[in-house]
Image 1 (cartoon, one colour):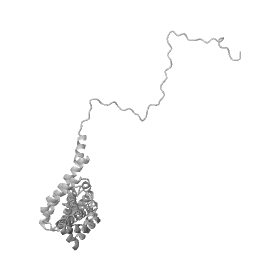
Image 2: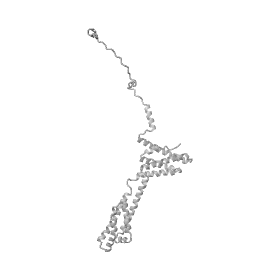
Image 3: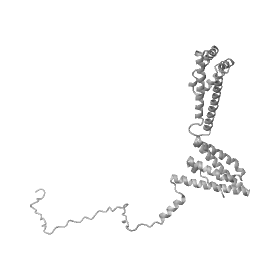
Length: 306
């Protein structure tokens, strides 16, 4: 019976790049046949969604792509704040037209309240600018801003702050979404789980399929997936130094057909287990010719008691 010979151990031992390429190859090679298996489409879509999430972890840069644009907007709104603040302070001290001086002096306390705005962190700075804009848009203050010729600058200031706030919140949402999807390891595990589910579904459909077109499509899908799994199994085994069963059989045949070397036969083995423990035979000393035997003199050795 046609079925997918999936090996989860091999899948978990693939590098991220190998897993990416395997799943991409499966997706590209089976899509044309899955069209003929409508019952498989939902599971295949779930598999592709997991693959896209896994793929995004490779494409996402270490720094958020919005960071540089956010920095640029923040710099611009700082400069515009300084421009308006400078106009108010200089006119409050040096204006020669009484109405301009009066308008500047009326606005001076407002800007003194927000004097440290450019030095605040992003969130605090955004909130401070919102409050400052609200003060400047009051009827009496709007007329004073117009008297100083700063109406357009205030409008630009407000828009820059809105653009900054929108982009900053979008970056926060992207970071949250990325964190919810998990790190690369978690994404790879989710992808493998979806791939296993896809394979189990294909095997189940193969058992229940009756339409010839569907059966043919399922057989093609199974054949392609098995071929890819076999190829990546070889890759993993090669990297881990694992010999295939065919290689092991070849090694056994080589060992069995080798001719033993008989040019210098080894010496016969000695029995190390039962050493010879019998007493050696002691030969009596041999008398040398010419030696005169000693004769015992009874007078030389008197008897005991004499």
